[in-house]
Image (cartoon, protein in one colour):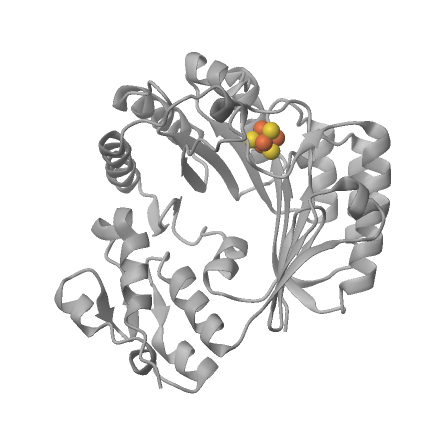
Length: 367
Ligand code: SF4
């Protein structure tokens, strides 16, 4: 049963120099056509399940005008929502206002996500982003006045020429906002982005590690729980939607470039606006057998602080994880912990989680 849904709105007012997401400049004619196609795609695929999470991401959903947002929510009103739904929308401080926030309240949005990324003027310039701190403070104030009590902000670190002091300043400012959730991203410069084309270099791995460690300890001192490799929240405010990915649960993904996990298929939508608006939504389908699914189970669940629930694994696959991957020596080495029937990577080893996950997968028992 599918309980989660992602909606992609690819439009942005400006394109950031590091951006590797599926996005494009906002052009009003495109938006109307896109929303019509989105409606058709949803109507052709959604089976009426009651949803526990809806996440509207992008791009920048808040770059849509009030009228376009109204049309979007009219389309999304087709979804049956559980009483405890987590309904999130991503926003940019530069194009959000009270009218849009009021509309969000009316349609049942109860979680807001904002990109801050950095507060440092030089770093913002490099990222080709703008951020007016007065606007940020005022927007958060309006959100609270309107009753939003679940807000996320995104932080990017490991920026070229960034120092630990710069990172400290960013975190200090973010803590002053007293938001419920903070997502962090270490900047990875992809070749085809503007930064990549300009041959901008990543910072050293040692400094990246220092910054990660600094973030982890600083968040702890400020009462944010480190519940996933890059995500921190106040008690009870973990992202239910993103946790569905890490739990390897099924989800719908609608819109250009979106991905879905439905039954035994991981589906990736086209990134071509022409194809999408012409009704050719899907770019590729990966068909999964049980071995593939168990592999995803390990890769995704080990990102979380509570790791893999071994009872859940057994009930899903009718076999124990230890009979599929012989990971015992990794527990002896201290890179995995078995506690209360959960298998997880201890927090001080999260920085090398990718190699630990590979080690688990390499211990597959064949036959
Ligand atoms: S606002 Fe977000 S999606 Fe748009 S260009 Fe910048 S990083 Fe990419």
